[in-house]
Image (cartoon, rainbow, N blue to C red; front, side):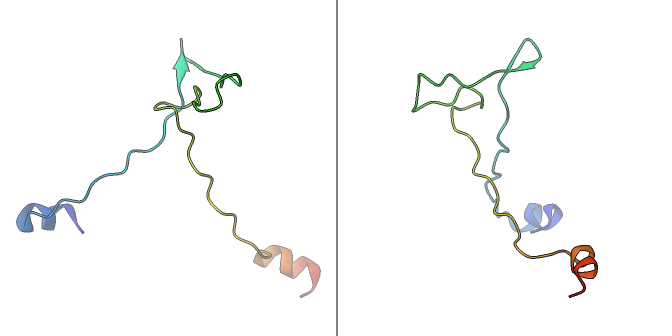
Length: 67
């Protein structure tokens, strides 16, 4: 929904926070492999789930392969 319409109607959707990398003095913090249940490299201790890759060939690749 658009933000101006949300103000009029009053419905609010929960905003999903983007996962953030943990930093230490401006540098990325590494994950401690000895703690399997917590991922120190990410704020909140949970790494984001990777998006699925789109399978198939792109237009450029199809053109190159002659398909």
